Image (cartoon, rainbow, N blue to C red; front, top):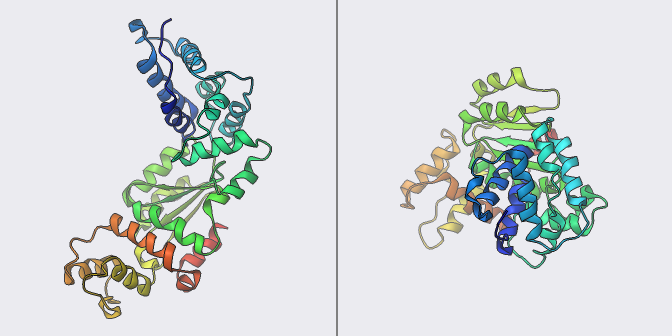
Length: 319
């Protein structure tokens, strides 16, 4: 069959997509379909069987890289599939395909700005002896040991940064942080992931999410934990003095808000919305502010700033 070789600049994308946290039958099928569509020159392959598709992709893939006999990366991915996911025969069919991942990894040795999972692949290709030690040494997150399921983008943006102030590095521990896309999506996300993953969950919810907890608890396994914030919303975890200083840092050429702008009668989000309105900072956007706050915390905060925060209790429960 006629085909084009895969260009080297596409190698990082392939490696990223082949090692994302999804069962192999999902991630490999997506990548293999893409390779067939982009690089096969045979128009009759649109309805090709899975077995024939795998064989053709192996041919295209291996013709696009310099060959070696090292399939250790493939074996590591097979082992992690058994650790992460429930058995699926199609997944094992895809993972058994002898695409030469080691060669592809070798050919991107000088590439920069790679996804975290591709950086991990590069590291283990250089040292395959103990992948857990490599994770701890280089803060790689892979192999994954636990899922932290949170409500939304604010938690996803800030949790890792705040944890690091307490020397609690979730990437060294192998904890993957996943946002559900909103409070009302947490139970659905948890239910969906339970269909395929065996890894334990730590589920973090706002104080007002008791209904969501009730939906989750019937499915909660012994290895999973669920935690409702006592302080309110996630923004209420952040001490007022940090929020005040972060706002004034971001808007340093404009008016400065003061500590008294934070009312104890309002939630922290309500306070932030009122402050932005009062000082003419424009519309308060949670996701944008979370990124600005992350930058401020990374550069100007220490664990002492959070010593009275509920985050201390959360870390103790997660450890």
